[in-house]
Amino acid sequence: MATKAATAAVLSGLSDVIAQLIEGTAIPSLAPGRCVALILVNIFYITPLLSAMYDANEWLAADVLQLPADTWRGSVVRLSVDQLLYAPPVIYGFFWAYGMAEAIVAWVLGGTPLIWSAIRAKLWSQIALEYRGMLVSNWKLWVAPQLLSFRLLPPALRLPFGSLVAFGWGVIQSLIINR
Image (cartoon, rainbow, N blue to C red):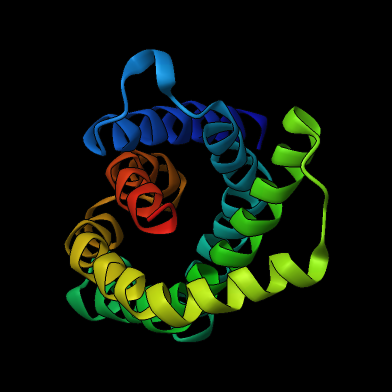
């Protein structure tokens, strides 16, 4: 888990830096708090949750449904569980995890007061505006790589492969969450 978390930290940090550069932020003006918040979310929310979900998905497909991964049927079932059952709540939770991490980092780095009612109101508004778009963006990016991952890779290599795809996804997430 420590290796997965360290990898996620590096990739999510780089993803946010790239997103900030895409947005036109000059290198000396990069927002470190934003980057730290995204790193924390990936270490403490995304990595452990997705590790457990990959394991649960494999257990369900292989052990319960008896569907080998090296079949298209087995791969499509794993993909369906991943993208239709897991992705929607994980993305929803991402908004909350990032919003809380962003508020805490702003408090630690800059002394911004933690006004929970304001944080909640901001998050509800952001979810109402951005959730559907982020979910659709997730499906556009993740369906093909995940199908290949479930079809061609052993379970132990799926999360590392997913981490590479997550590098691009991290740029997209950072751009959406920081509009």
